[in-house]
Structure formats: structure tokens, C-alpha cells
Image 1 (cartoon, rainbow, N blue to C red):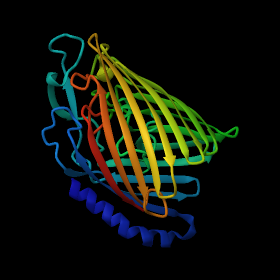
Image 2: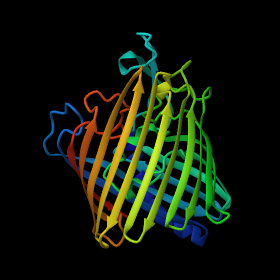
Image 3: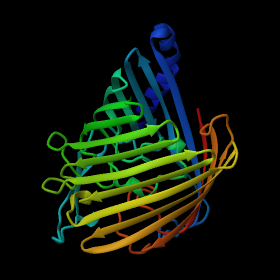
Image 4: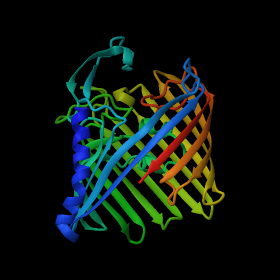
Length: 371
């Protein structure tokens, strides 16, 4: 499967030039790609015995955007993701404690969706006006300000603790508007169950849906404010609770300084009415000059699971070094993560490389090239 997808991507890249030439000025195609290589030192996850210097990758992506009149489309693949067909996990609350734990996995045999995770975005759409643009396919749900920031433009090396609670990408349909009345905008969409989310472990395509929306206000590049809400039905499987999430976020820029904040609240994590979680962060950045930026971001999370509350904090201290004509063309990010709270007993959502937060101190470096 992975070889087939790779062949398709390479073939499409080789054919993009002739296609654009034949179509003349009627079609506009823009190709993009980026690679992020990492180096880490320290535990980062409590109990990690492989805490020496190690190398890896966060994203290895290629894609294109196209436009023909008011019609637009996008494809993005990530070769650092699994190309196999996703599987559905079926759960059973064996100990009847109201919480569905990983140890209660029954089987993993049914397809969740037919779109493997190597496909990050595959969308088609039509723009009626600035106030109304509709698209269908697989793409990010409008839940999470930092989550809806491109992976090649992040202020720190990883997406942080709030990533565990967003609804992630999912197949669906979304209506959007921007620059309404000067600076207002909105997104509202309906999706298949958001099973790529760390906070959602179930839901049946055709029986269950997910819903998400956000409203925002922008004052040029200086100020951005947004509020969002989302829900994925029967988030732990048939008969379980709906997962709901809401949040508030904002960004302010003035000269070399940037300030960001975000608060996100998730209820009925993985369909359990005994599991809620909240996360907030505050971010500050100082762009010393064109080449150097210093940042600090503090995360705080609280997980309430089966009547027990635990908390965790992650504080990133970072240095961003920009080596290309644009910030994302060639970049080095150096972060040290300080951990506090109940790092050994933290019961928050985990999944992926960092979506649940780090539970031990460590150093992370990322080297990015992008076009």
C-alpha cells in the first residue's frame, strides 16, 4: 500500500508540469513539501530507559494546492505516517468502573475509515465569495488554534498538551467564511467520527457523526481571537457517551513580540462519563532579529478520571534560528522541556509522540527544510 501511494505521489509530481502547461492560465498549481528531522536527549516520557541521544522525524510531507476559477483542491501526504488501512478498536468496560481502559481492548478487526493516515489532506471545494466557501474531503476540523497552525510554522518543536483534546482530521463537509464585516470569520462542518483524535476511540461511520464550528475575529496580523466547539458521537463505541470539546484562544503581535493563549476543555474522553480533561497554555515570543527568536510556552493540564484528579505542566524554553529567505524554508528549533505536577501518576489523554504531554524533562532539536 505504501509503495503504491509513493508511486502515485511521484507520478503526480512528474506530471504536474505538463498538466499545468496544457491547461494554460486556467489552472494554477502550487507544490509544497517539508522535512523535519529531530534529535532528543533525556527521558521525556517517565520510565523511558532509552534516554540518550536519538534521532527521528516529525513530518516528511509533500503535496499540492490547485485552483481553477472558483474551484480549488489540495492533497498532502506524510511518509512518516502508517500507510496501512486503519482498524476499529472495540472496547468493553470489563471491570464496570465506568472507564474504558486500554487493557479492555476486545478486538481490532473492522475498518474505521478507508483513508490511511499517510493521507493528511485530500479536499475539493468551491468559493462562492469571501463569506461562503464550501469544501469536502479529509482535512482538519476547526477545533484548536494551535492545531490549525501548519506543522511547518509552529513556535515550538512539538504540538503540545492541547493536541490530545482536539478532534483532529476527519472526512467531512465544511462551510467557511472570512473577512466578513471587516475581520470576522467562521467555520462549521459535519464529519465522520473523529477517530484520529486521541480523545476518541470509537464511533461508527453511517451511524455516528461529528460536528465542529468556530467563530473568529482578526485585526490584520496584530490580533486574532477565536472560540470553538466540537462533538464526536459515541466516542468510545456503541452505547458510550458523546465526546464534547470547546475552547477559547487568541494571539497578539506587536513589533518583535508575540503573545498567545489557549484554553481547551474536553468532556467524556473516549466516551467515558468518568473522564474529563482541561488544558491551557500561555506563550511569549521575542524576535530579536530576522535570524533569531526566543520563546517560552507554559502548559498546564488537569485530568479528572474515575473520581481522581491529576495535573501536569510542561514548560518549553526555546530558540528558533531562521536560515532561509522565509522562516519555514530552513529552520532550527532548540527546546528544553521542564515538567512539573503529577508526572508519575498523570492520567491525561496520551497518544502519538507528544499529544498527551511530556512526563519527564528533556531536550529536543528539530531541523526543517521546506519549499
